[in-house]
Length: 234
Image (cartoon, rainbow, N blue to C red):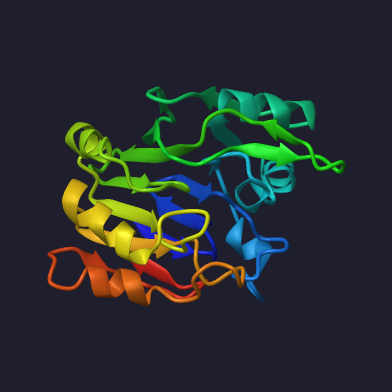
């Protein structure tokens, strides 16, 4: 499996025939910087969304139109995107699992919000925020927590799914910060590898993963902190 961090909460996952983008926020993403959008979206087969905020939906519509990728998101978000012209989508909701042939997606809980803000400043709900639990045909498993705080039912997610790889938001203000994220990983999960995200993009969130890295010292979990555009082979 090849995992590439694309800044903020955006990731590209390549495994088998699947080319997956999660939360493809590229245009306007300070963390994406000078990376190549076409390269990031090359041959993409699936786009997975954790929730409806603009810094996660990002370039979904444009990439889906260009690539024909299937978009997987909560029901309300899929219906909103369909109204905007999205044709190929597979909706779900918290607790549900969707079989995408070479992998499955389960919608887990996340403590956050999910909405679109109109030009007049009104917030329109786009369903529940989620984490995304992926199980691959080769036996690998990955949890993208989405945007969330710590919560005790993370223990149930681990009991049910046993994720090997965790993608963990650490930027504070809108999600848990690095120290709390480290506590979540230690108390509720047994990740082999943890990748922090949702930091280093906007100036009002933490710019480095230092607090998370420090909090994970002495654990068995390998903490990987690639720069945007860098890949890991796991």
